[in-house]
Image (cartoon, rainbow, N blue to C red; front, side, top):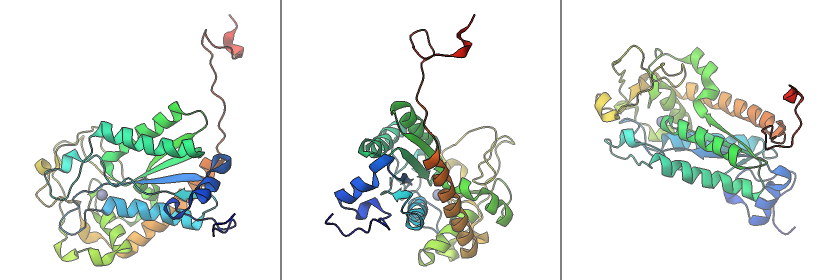
Length: 287
Ligand SMILES: [Zn+2]
């Protein structure tokens, strides 16, 4: 062993490892791999376009720093599925089928290297469905790996419900929640003088988007330039604070580590074939 890694406190981040260290991290089923998946997208006049990336990259790295024995944080997917925001400057989009294939290939690489537990930590609403699909495809197309997808805000649902000052239907984008996170992570890049509330008018009593309370029963994501009043905000960033951000961050890291412990311990049983082509025994064959 001629690299400098201390086997008792292994490195938390893949990008800082040599290949012998990366090999060691993937041995015996590997650690739980956390892949941050973000977006480059307008976040109102007061926040930088990297909000979704910055939050999930920090979250994964922090969880791995606290539990490097259990978790490996890997470099993020920077660009996401963003067609609905292309009317605003600073937004980059990847077509959904390209996104799914690309993210799948990245995740599949970790499985091919030896890891058997993969978690996509998503920071961008429109990536949620494609990330869930990638996780499903990994489960379906590998023999010994399990993959899961988490929208990071879901990990703070209870804490945010208790702390929120915006009404339900008003916590969606560049809002109280996301602005609080950024004020916690990098306050010098937030221009609160430019922050404006934009509580979009409801177009139907069946349609709303809320990160914390869940979305309405009807899914309809229109082009943002049609529904926004021009700010690109959906919610009220004036209710944000660094203290709320710190609270979200702590509860999300704690819940993420707890899930990783359960996920690593989750047994993986063999697939069985009960069809007429299969050989596996089943007590319900009788009759
Ligand atoms: Zn965002």
